[in-house]
Length: 221
Image (cartoon, rainbow, N blue to C red; front, side):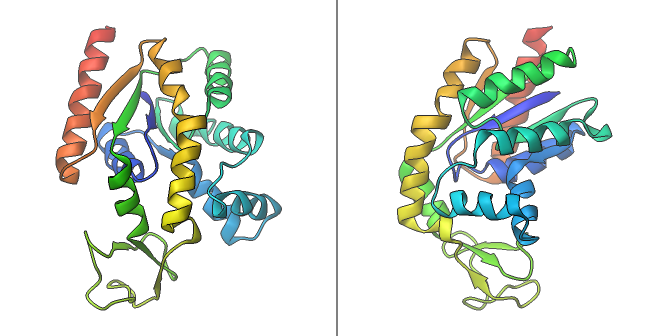
């Protein structure tokens, strides 16, 4: 399957993307991971992306599109993929349509994760990341470390990313509503949108998503 995952920041897209991609045996293509790799290596692209991300704004279209195109052309994405973080606006969605058209393939579904703004702020502002390994993530309320400020896994320092502060989260939500949310209507016009609630235990959300995607796949046949 070829799936686009959408929803506001804090909806749990990253977590669900990994789980869904593993279950469906397709690669999880996260532009966020691509950006972070460039940032950690202090490339010119990474410096540019970081300046936008730290301010709670979106990375320019041409950068995101180029990264996504390169990743989708890798061998493991031939039979499907799950896009997480791209497209983020209607222009990118149109660009993706053109990219897929040149390969004579199309999207199977756009999975929309719904969550309230208050929940988004609570989820993101409470997040703490390990400086040694960014894959180690904790939350002051939902999954606190055993020792405050210290990673349970490797002992690294836990910190709050600049773009996780409450003020920046509010800015990110404004950006989402004005720039990203319109792609839902764009894809609804193509009959691709499947909406589910992202509230509840992670396992339940994953199963909810899989059930919805299966129904969408069956209805398309």
